[in-house]
Image 1 (tube, one colour):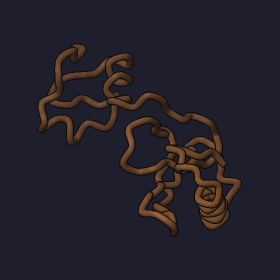
Image 2 (cartoon, one colour):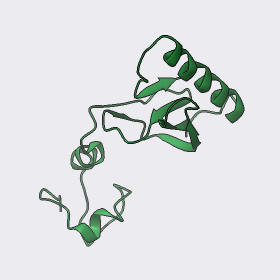
Image 3 (cartoon, one colour):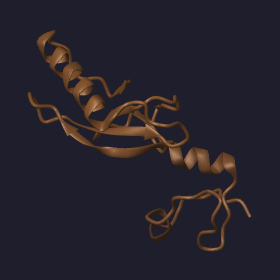
Image 4 (cartoon, rainbow, N blue to C red):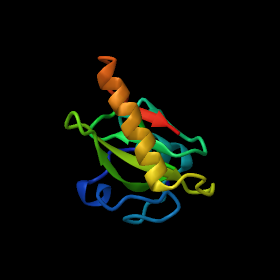
Length: 120
């Protein structure tokens, strides 16, 4: 069975895997992709580490694992660092954090707003 309507709120909170049955319904890959994207306009799928600004709905990195959060020292913006699940990490968390902090500081010194995502 393919789900085509809206998800009941009880199912939405526990809905993570397209290959699992939830409330007796199996989701097709097309439906799962549409549900997973929600309102995001784009996604990052590259193999390198990424930093995604929290609280925005422009971009996400669904195949990256959470590597922790970093707060910009000059403003309240927070970013989560993500590592691709299928590729080994060539960079340590400290290396990516330092690179991110450097980019964020450069944004402030140049008068730019932070991007929603950064690739490393």
